[in-house]
Length: 116
Image 1 (cartoon, rainbow, N blue to C red):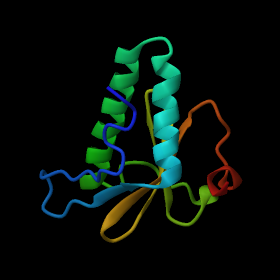
Image 2 (image 1 turned 45 degrees about the vertical axis):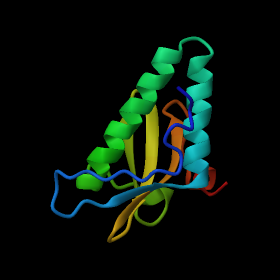
Image 3 (image 1 turned 60 degrees about the vertical axis):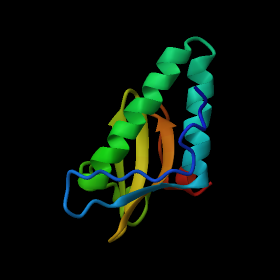
Image 4 (image 1 turned 90 degrees about the vertical axis):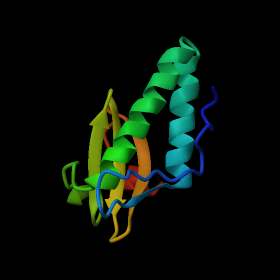
C-alpha cells in the first residue's frame, strides 16, 4: 500500500442526510504522505493503520464537522481533531470540510505554522 492510495479522493459518508465533502489541501496531502513514509520506515502495517484512522476521522467530520473544538487562535473558523498523536487542522464551509494540515501533536501549532 502507498501513501497516495487515496490522494485527491474526497470522503463522503451516507450516515447523515447532509454530509459535507472532505477536501484535503495540497499541504494536508503532503503531511499525510510524509506521516505514512516516516512510520513505514519501521512498520508498513502501522503506517497503513494511521491512514485508516485518518480516513475514519474524515468520515466522522463529514457527518459531524463540529466534532473538534474551535481554535480561533489558529485562524477564522479553524478547528482541530486529535487522533493517535496527530492533530488534524480543518475549517468548515457550508458544503465542505477543508483539511488544512495534519501535524504531530508534540508540535506547537500556531497560526503562522498553518499559513506556511
